Length: 173
Image 1 (spheres, rainbow, N blue to C red):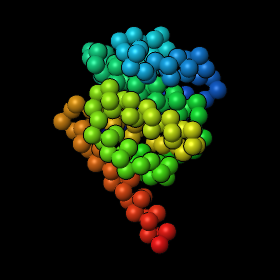
Image 2: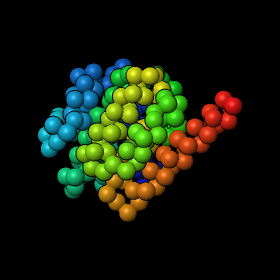
Image 3: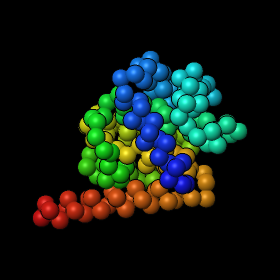
């Protein structure tokens, strides 16, 4: 996935953090990420897609709309709870939060709704611990699922997680 296609999520996240982004839309996006709302795109989602997501990402692909619904909901969760500042790569943030290796592996092996559920739990944990994460990593993982390049973000997450964990181990000994 090209950098332009990934970094729209960073821009959207920064916009969600602004005081002028409607709080009702933020809440609606957070609620709309659940599996129970699948197929029921909210007005907040459509406004967000039309205003912030590249049209080639969603205009002719209903499955992509569902993935973008998940991404927007996860970014809204971060915008609601996470502190401001530059986000860390997802793998590094998970290592910082001391997410278990088993949970990381479940995330990396998951697809479809299982991936969305697993990532939702990780993002909630990171946000509640005040650990900022790079939004483009979240969108890259979700939007690459089921594509020929789906291993790229997973490998990147694993590399960052284990690199951070290795540094922590070597400093602790």
